[in-house]
Length: 92
Image (tube, rainbow, N blue to C red):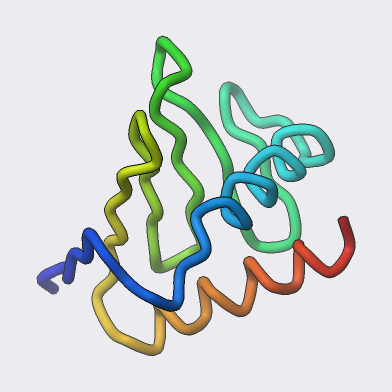
């Protein structure tokens, strides 16, 4: 299955995603270097400048200066990712 990649999506609020990322890192269950919370997983690269926020089927990578890449196989998987972002944001 090939993955779709987006470097810009008007639906994505990067600042909201970063807040959700921090919440998952602060409140998620730890498994190695990854934290899991409400269907999302969060981790960083070795230097902390790149962060990863994943659902089961989609992956958001945020690079330095808030540049980002979204990876997913189907549009429905991206929609599911946004739903999970919203759910976590509601409990923060």
